[in-house]
Image (cartoon, rainbow, N blue to C red):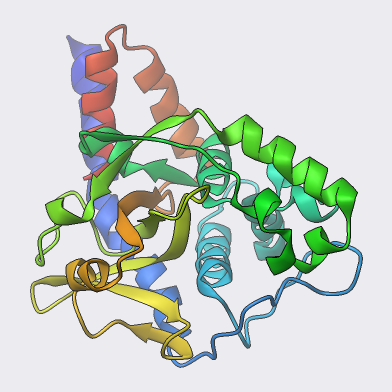
Amino acid sequence: MKKVFFFFSILFFLSGNAQENQNLIIKNALQYIGTPYRAHTLEFGHQEKLVENKKAVDCTTFVEYVLAQSLAQLDSINKQSEKTFLQKIRYRDGIINGYTSRLHYFSEWIQEGEKNKFITDITALEATDSMYIALSYMSTHPQYYKHLSNSSQNREEIAEVEKSISGTIIKWLPEQKLPTEGLPWIKNGDIIALTVGIYGLDISHVGFAIYQGGQLHLLHASSAKGKVIIEPIPLSTMLQRNKNWTGIRVLRPNVYLDQKEYTKTEALIESKDSTENKIDSLKILTE
């Protein structure tokens, strides 16, 4: 009985810190307001290397820079640099080994982020709708990617990546189930990944959740506006107005726990025998 009480006491303590420190994501993201939008900022030369260009961002690099900065600011144990976090966020197993080692598909980006304990898939805990991942877009449209159009080896490798991810079943929130005011389990600073109905593709846009005037908006690098903005219309309206967007996935940055605290909490969660108890505990942790 004492063990159970101690377990939930820790979780409630951490959940109290969660929303406070979650604002670190928003604080860091707001620093990019007005930053120019630019596509292909990572396509630098022939050799793949870690690029850090904060003067111009696309939707993914914007999210990556904010997440890396926030994780580095709160890493009180290992004191890893922002660039170290960025490399782990952007590349499979944190290793740069050519163009295809980069996490081009956001579904794999999410998988790696969860593996590294950088993010938590909140839709996996809260949503009830399932989606089957089937990827093929990059290998079947190499003309849109410089490093695929000029390299048969890269095309073959990216096709293997697609096969390795395809077949995964994930949870998502269809756009018709997202109200204008958002949902209680979507918090300020959560990463919002917009799912797409284009064949062979999974996610086409990302940003951060931010509430304004009781409505859920998206803080993102907008190609239409040409810069980082807080979208003036609610996220639900954004989804309704774009025929390709079908819904969202919600990922919570684990910026409110340092590694030592996370390891202790994870060990307590793993000690629970019941899967139901485990999921309920994670819900408390992320509320």
